[in-house]
Image (cartoon, rainbow, N blue to C red; front, top):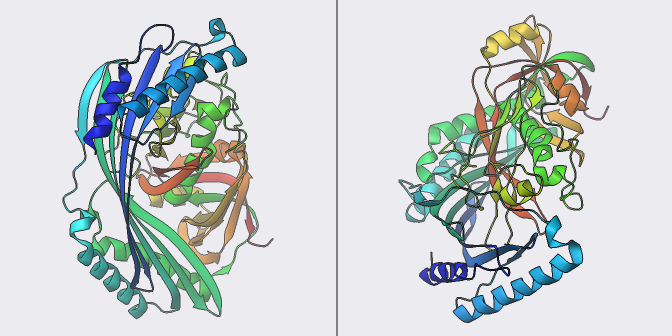
Length: 480
């Protein structure tokens, strides 16, 4: 990270004081990205990019303004801050009087550095990664009973360095490496079927264990073989349905995480990402069965969505969004939360220096229950087991949703039966959460990239859960 920008961040903080600036923070954000793209085992692209700059945020007179100068000079900072103060004064007159503004909640003073070290950085081991993907691709071709006509691999290695300082005596330096491998496969046996998935972590390439990758890939290949050669049409009725961690995760992220973001709840995201089925007054409202426990916990080190302090300088905590079926808390950052006297729980994140931090998720999941998968299937009795999905959809208020299964089976007398083709779970958030009857005792998390904001800010996250038993859920088939 460039020392010039760090010195300028420290310099910017000196502007605080008096009626012109009540609060100021500065964030140096340096991102390095390495990306390898493969098609059918062949390396087609190896890219590198780096981006660095400074973001400054000022709060005064009930108004927040943000700017991102990328010229490393004191003159640029002077001009930027003067312009921001002028905007504060103008906006405070136009929007609302100062006495109707809000006061920022105090936060703890901190001076800390946290660094996540990788054992084997990608830049020093590119040839090994190329060899690993080549070997994986050869194994797929040699051991598939159907033709896998397209095999696409995209490996992204992102190193995020930050320096945050604020007039509240907060100073945080951090470094987090993130690795994610996206795999997309298309199989053919008269007709086509496709599946995409990712694995990822905050680590170096030591995470890319060949045996683990092979297991993950060949499970999807086996599912393709079943769909194209053995699967029967999906029945259509109401069933007891067991869903796997991938579907549990997308439900946790889309049907709980997003509508629990306080800026969406207050209507601040309505023109960009949508709204929420919740009101800020809905704390303690019953929203699901007593089996519904959904949390967002970015402090799980090693997971792709991990971080320790947010971009307001607040230490993260485990946010229990739904507890025993009741709304427990929302995702809150310092600035939006202060408007309605709700304290931050560390949910402020920015994708880069030129974007203002927004309320974002980190690691969102259903918590584990106390049953094994076998016991969960036995509890279901007769129904459908949907291991993962091939596509999903949800409306902008996060009420109506649809998940099309990929690997799926009938459940017959508590046992896994014949494979079925593309069952469709179409329901509402209330029905899904209300029908949750039991959870398995093992959580699995999946990496992803969440989009929000305008301009769009892609954010690394994780999502998942245990297997979930949903009772009496309507199942349709693709196309009908």
